[in-house]
Length: 211
Length: 418
Image (cartoon, rainbow over all chains, first blue to last red; front, side, top):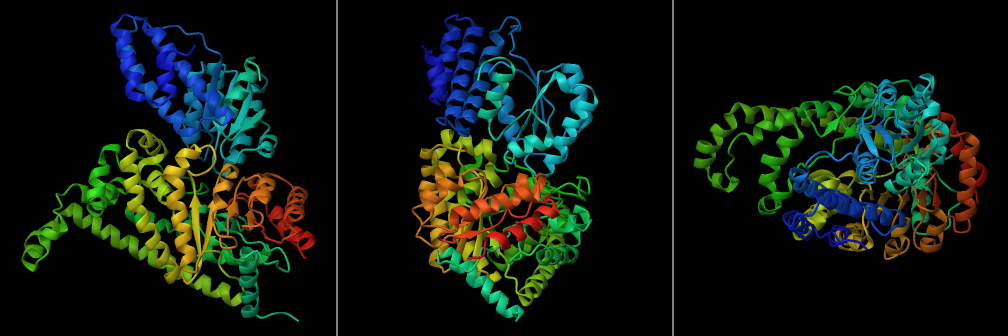
């Protein structure tokens, strides 16, 4: 049964969602539970997106409502809750490309779906990916790009990860508007996606969460 | 017997027009929609030089058009880097600016208008553009936001114009902005001189240019240029009325601009770059509310003025094809990026020609065999009517392999002659 809060967020009723959060916090509800309900809403939106029943505006607006709720809840949280994560992800837009819209949506949705996401930003050189992989030890690496020059940067990044002896430790997805099976094969990645739904599906598969 | 340039030009224009009008042509042409760095890249010229040396760039486009056997010469999608520099624009980054010499120029999307500024913009779009938008998009124009500009009508007589306007224009930040605008204008003049010389030279050689100028649909103007994807998306929920009013206002400008560019360029084909209308970017309901009415209005206005709307449907437009069926048959030169070609054939096969859709990824990273197989599939699908023009999904990709671009020509000759 979805909670009242989950339903308000999924229904894009921002004011109502924030009012519910205030009411619950005033009534002494566990702030961590409030946050969980909000995250559940984002998870529902992500699933709807995968099925073609929700679209980018819902994800962005949902993320925005989440931000407002997190700001309300933060002062009430006694200590940082040590949430269990579904796995770490290192992600960035590859060298030469500064586009971040698609990547940011993927980062948001992986985050609310329980992944520990390390976003390296845009125009990320190969060495920075390699260093982050050494440090974070992620299960998943996401390489994003919009321009055609990103194909070669993605390939260089995958090659660089292999040269550093880290290829077997990670699953690599290439994503962005021009990505397809051809790009996956050219770059030597393990999967590809044009949208956040495909990114979530791959992440689930690679962390043992089913298809 | 070989044809003269003039004859070839006429044949190619006629073939294009026949295909758009769904009249069966003699063969399938290659019509590259737009070009950026490909032509200079294959000659070993840096992206930086391509942006600053306009004649060098246009000469390279000429060479590529001939070498790769294109039927039209693609329109240059790059603007003058010396113009960016004169403005000190922060809305674009480019090779020779703060990007490496071999990077591509890139647009920096941002909230150049804030969510709480709609009413100010709607009340005085000119003043808002001058004093709010200009300073936000270009460093050298920041002075326009630092001086308290009165409404222009306050200066509507010689006395006030001199006594108020005179000192205002003398203020150093304003002077710097005006000088920067004039320097930008000079740079653009050099660019357009090279552009006009190229159009003339290519026409004499028999190559029509694909389109004259781009006109962005009203929603994309607001989303790309004013509010960003994030901002415009949130506005659908938080400020829908103001968003719609702004789209209506921008729409008037876009239609007027479309009429103007057809006249100025003498080219009936108007490029309409399509961004946020793609599948996934919004629901059908949102598309019907925020995107479709103004896009349809723009397309219809161009058709009514005797032009050929040439939208480039970037992304996957398969879920939107049902809307495109509302356009009159044989009037729109729709160019497609990632659409499902078989669904297109079913939904729009008797209404619109099919242009583009050869995967960018294959041209950049695949083999000539893959290119030929893809072209064969297209000809097999559309050969019955011949309503087909070849191109990648997005014009000539910067990183296309030359052997793949040659394979496109060979495939057109091998499979595309009726």
